[in-house]
Amino acid sequence: MKIGILGGGLTGLTLAANLEKDYEVLEKDAVCGGLCRSLQEEGFTFDYGGAHIIFSRNQAPVDFMVNMLGENLVRGRRNNKVLFKGILVKYPFENGLSDLAKQDNFECLYYYLKNEYPSPTNFKEWIYYTFGKGIAEKYLVPYNEKIWNYDTARMSMHWMEGRVPRPPIEDVIKSAVGIETEGYTHQLYFFYPKTGGIQALIKALEYKAPNISREFNVTRIVKQGAGWVISDGKGEKRFDEVVATIPVADILGAMSEVPQDVSTALNKLRYNSLICVMLGIAKPHINDMTAVYIPDREFLPNRIGFPMNFSADNVPEGKSSLVAEITCNKGDRVYDMSDEDVITHVVEGLHERKIIDKKDLCYSKVMRTKYAYVVYDLEYLKNVKIVRDYLVQTGVILCGRFAEFEYINMDACIERAIKLAVVLNRG
Image (cartoon, rainbow, N blue to C red; front, side):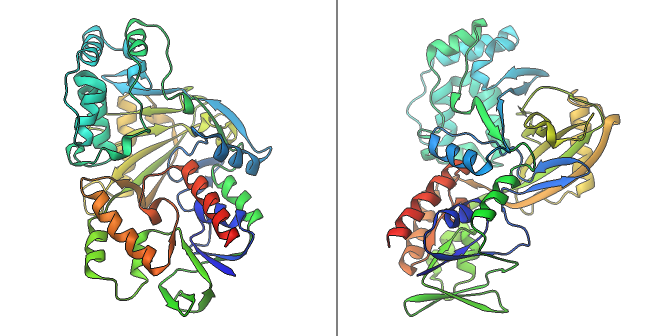
């Protein structure tokens, strides 16, 4: 049996690295990695999609990534902040209430304890129900509406189950009176490649699973007898099984005679694109933070990551670095901004907020990613089921964030790829 794997990102390469059957990975770009690519330029290393640190609630995918990286690994401790009214508040926000002005602190604690919101029916209501009016209105609603670029009242809440737990009452009270507490403890410590950025993980996977055809852009997927024919318009490849890790829109776009209801459902699935502004600063160690979350609606970035604090090898000696992440949608005013205008906006905003001194800027670059985040609108479950059911009927196997059209992180992509490899190895 020969298995065709469409896409050489983290999911596709993890699957290939765990297969005992004959396989071939088809990657449209000259470089593998997908969302897990890194840029190395002028001594700086940046990840295309922002902060790709290694952590999980489940140990197995962490062990897999750590083993793949071997000695090329460093361990870090989270030092994230939320920038609220000019104050750097400990992250998660509910664990840093004592950093707030007294009135804001009081309102967050009071409404968390005196929370009479009914059972929620959408994401916005879930935020109020789980955290109370104070934390919801000061941070969680404005921040989430920035990162999702969508009205939280029009988003489903199904995806929050098990993802963000309700913080214990005792922790929120301790936080309000200044007793140290930690939230999201599964991500308190993390791993990261010492050199090469997250692309180092991709390179390690490529070494283990080298049967890759690069610059093969899948344009046609045809079921032929008991197998498949995959074409890039220049040549054809034949497989017994096909696993697609590429975006579901590209999968269906390469198939003929897709039913109208499937096409309609596909067109209703929402996603966000991402603009990353990568900045080099001609000053050593400008801070010791790993990330800053920014709910301020006037400033476009929702998160600033600091690669210099993931690994010292990410920056030249005597310099610092950061990545500003901006979500957008094709056709909106942010998407249509020029790279120069985006850089100017970010640099000026960071200068005003005293995160950098703009005179120290020594490097800048913009990277744009078309498919970044799956958006769970209220019709998501209905529409994604129609699309998935159709592809299951055709026999195409889906695996990965945009193939399954599900907001999953690196750890879940790895878990699903390994689980699928076990099934295919038995078949």
